[in-house]
Length: 255
Image 1 (tube, one colour):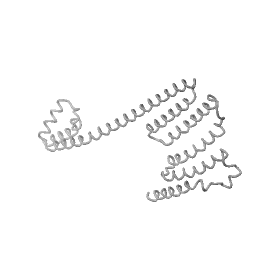
Image 2 (tube, rainbow, N blue to C red):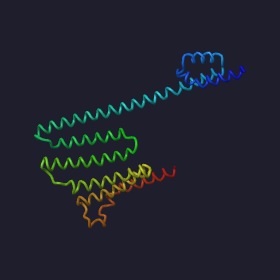
Image 3 (spheres, rainbow, N blue to C red):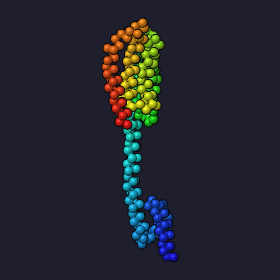
Image 4 (tube, helix red, strand yellow):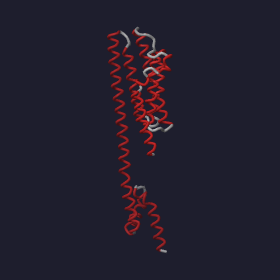
């Protein structure tokens, strides 16, 4: 009977050890457990092993929490610092522009550029999932807004130049956004390796350069089938495609 009572007492004490280590038991229970540990060698060993194990785990958790807090604080101060610098730069440009030109002209372009850069850096610093797609979305919207501001500033506010936004700006912008978006989508959704994405990008650069010259009039549409200067202008890209394509194949074979 005494043996059974001792076994029962040991089981109860061992169940309460986690609470005992965390000091979550009452004073009466604490005294009972203290008394039991003084006379029971097995329970005392289990208690010391459990206490040492918890002490080894606690510092690593605390260290990771501190590191996470420090990284978050660094990002916060970096973003606040960039925001303050951009605000000061925009404010100075506005004051100078108003003083010299008696109105808002080139300062709009500078301000838009600063806001675009801040938005891009903020996106890269805060986004954790699909960072490439979100960054490309910011680039797509930001570049279009910046081109629009440049067109409005020079054509309407300054009164120089021609209206080129929809004739040249938008078509070329959409073309090169396609060149940038396709490798990012292949990397994000098709899980291509980085080398294949670079090879795809270089291939699209060849097409982008050629179509850009067609849009701007450097090439005539009737010359498209003759591919004038195509090989010479794309030689570096072709070499890059071959090199990065081979590296991509090697990476796949290794996996």
